[in-house]
Length: 291
Image (cartoon, rainbow, N blue to C red; front, side):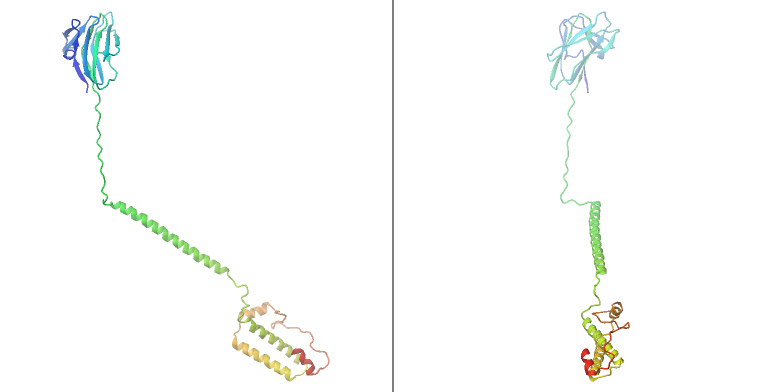
């Protein structure tokens, strides 16, 4: 808050013989000091940021000239010509000053009317002290419920994603195995070693029996050797029938592959080359060809 110091205050020191004091209801505190003598001074000591000097300006023919010096520094010269009488007029306003005490010297620089009504002092701003109160939270403080809820949601989301990932991996493995089993086909399913030799021997025996039957049908007669061979074939057929059941795959193989190892199929008529000449030959001469 600014401080007003009236011209009649005892803190102001006027040079002797150069100033006059009068009263006027229009002046501040109804008093004023004036001078018409060049060199008359008024000295005032103060402390503040700025200081201003107010007085009364008169419309004389010559302007009022005054000087203002602070702490012995160079003077500030002010010249003012009034058109009419002006009360509480600002003659001087200082620049910002330091916080130390200062001395202002006001001087009338010409033999012209000059007056001082009061001084206005602006104080320095008081620095504001800010007190910061730091509150340290206890290490064993309780966790708020919404924090617990957020943590539970995070953990639940992580577990859910892990379970979903495991399920996806399991489904992918199962589909991959099914895909592989679908295309794993035995290239030769009919050539199983457990039945192929027996069936091959049976087919060979049937082939020989058929040739013997054709030979007999041609009128070549019979012999003990041929009868023994026919009995042997019948025994092999009966034994093969008892030991193994009919195999659909074998039946399919016979129809699909009419010739196997140079032997004819039984499902189609077979043409054989002549096994004998037109003449009748003894059994002893014909049989060795089939032994």
